[in-house]
Image (cartoon, rainbow, N blue to C red; front, side):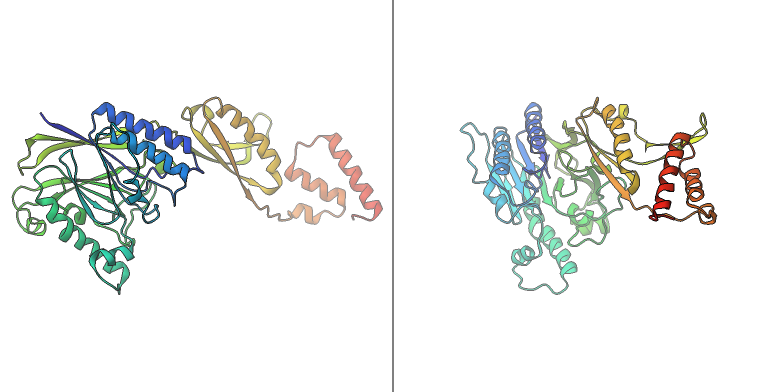
Length: 426
């Protein structure tokens, strides 16, 4: 049995200004796990860098590439975060003497016949200027619609014929926006985005598997192609329909405090059995996700407010959150965001610190993010109707601080009396 395992990763977006150690630790774990699984080909679906890179970031990526090349070939497609030319520069990095593969890079639609026997068709992030250059055009009248049509032409007219002529495993590797994908479990699907691709557009590529980058939330679809009738005519594949998986690798680590980042992080492994053919004469395959030890990032939201206490019949101000510190994931990075009135910030900070102290028994760090709410004061009728300053203060205290002790009340009334007699108040 000839089993071929392919590791698929994307969107690591190394950033020397943001959690670089976390990036390096997770990417090292990715290579180690790939080696344990016997991976002989690694595909990167784009966004290697967060922005135009510096020497520290390039060193981090070089380290990952060298380790991955010890397993076999590495193919990297350009994303939307890298500066032009930076992905192609990756192929110039010096590998170790014992590297088993080479680094292939794509900033234009490309094909690579890897040493593992897999033909990889690459579709990098489709900047509009690049689309014109790729297809030899000079102008784009209706930018968005024409761009979408161009992408379809590239897939069906350029990539598909080259994939279909290959007898071995075929993979389409791309970085792009896919109609119907979501950024998080609480977010609506993307529809009508600039230069988006439909699921059937990608399934029409002729690939056995489509590997995608750009959306950090892991998600996947299966699209049937071929068969009899109109669907078979559309894709040019008559006979029994086959199912093409379209897979977003998701990011290997967490980069934000968002619900979409709470899911497991990792990479995708596609396993081809080249000795076993499907009814369509294609190599049999299956795929799964491998989880990586990415640090959890948890957003806890609440407010500084009051809660009626039945035992004393009064309000007690406190931090009100739905998450108890002891339920947080161990080792997590936590952001505690709470609403607080402008005149209660000091008390809220002190109150939040008790929650933080308990949380730090389980988590790595807690960042406080107070959201200051402006106080709008409307004078109550009891205050308006009171004639003297002591009467007005008494009405105010009954509304805001009914538990004020007599000693403090008398002291404040004495100060008010002094101000009134001095002409400052009254």
